Picture 1 (cartoon, one colour):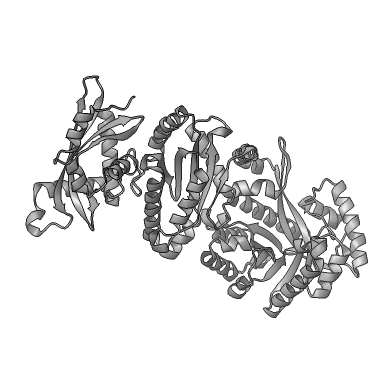
Picture 2: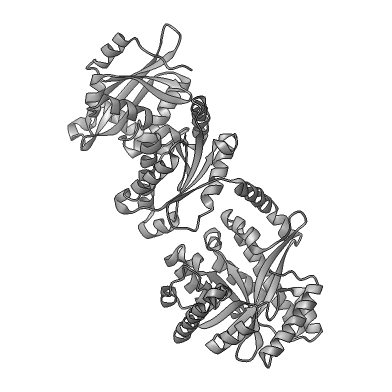
Length: 601
């Protein structure tokens, strides 16, 4: 639909009117402002007409009371699409306080058949009526409107932010992207996520979290226009915009975001899907922008990423894995392997680590890093981890029944396990039902998992330990490690990150760091385990440095439960009198288990 243009003389006459009114036109699913009278500008406190026109087109509800914005926005859309009368009462901020505004409108047709909306505005006083004013017809109507609004879920607008909801946004974005393309420009869909909202809510409370979401929604409306944004839910936002100058615009947004909500704010991750990657519908573009947004989901900083071909392939693989998880568990495409841990004091196996492998008929062999991140993102990883736990329990019961030696086994948990279920309760229940002593089930947590929500995870670790489950800190010594975590949480063991030893030009300095970490742990009464050992030299160095446990291909590759039984049947033990003996035995075990079909890292 073409924008209607008044004759210049008539437009000037209308704009000079002291009566507060406005004329709007509904074009491409959004409200466009045609006329604002002098009375309108005076009523709402606008000194600059250009500013008023800009705000009415891009952030019409900027000053509207948060509790009223979605209600009147939705009423405006119903009025524009279904006709009838427009009759709303709402609060808007004028100067230093809120005033009650009564807006009434009806449609008029031009001589060329175009439908316009003429809306008159009346100031009904401050939002603090005296007792004598309180029972006026207007205030009764206003209170009724507020009551209905609390029960009514907006059909087109989000109640918290006043931004369009997802379904209405799709309509706006399809039309808006078309307008941008008609100007031979490129559009982009942005998916945004406030990073760390759950931790923020735990720290400050849900009211403060809602305030932050509302403030961020206002900032987006100021930056991109109210009708170009939406809040699909939680702390997620979607925007469509002209791609020209986008990166500078986002940097400016990040800078402003650091100042909203009195400084109580969060970093913002942004995924970008530009038209240049391929013409797709809004829904698909949103999905792909979300994928780009989640690439750096563990990085606690504001940043943006563009969707690319590798992400597309990853998206297809992600969907396949999510769609086939239940089948993979049911048909045992996913198997659990166990890698022994050797105690340096006597050279004997003292525990095992459970590791999942997905042998897929279509994709082939998948290692944990190939599928676990997708399950974490989809909040499905608890199904996998509880399956692994069940296999561990089955193995322990099977060894016990046969009279074999039993050592504790460890399972790696993700932060998402604690978010999607009561994982501590689930582990306890399964162990008790099987009659398994809790100290035989070890829980491993990565430092990055704990850092995501430190206070909450500290509570969960304490719960695990109070229930008798040893808790190990996995991967300590990586680039982001902090000794403070050892001061604040009493781990039963820390697993050292051995990647430091694989940088030949930095081995000397790395060894000093590792020796320092081991001394620190010993001083705190915490055992240490070095994982990923591949050479005799590494084993000798770590034993001399005081590391209490070792693990890696140097000793044995991961083996299946069947492989463990085979080991016992052939009476193969991992107990060494010397590193040379360990090396010889390790080579023999590796050859045997590899020939038996065991996969390697």
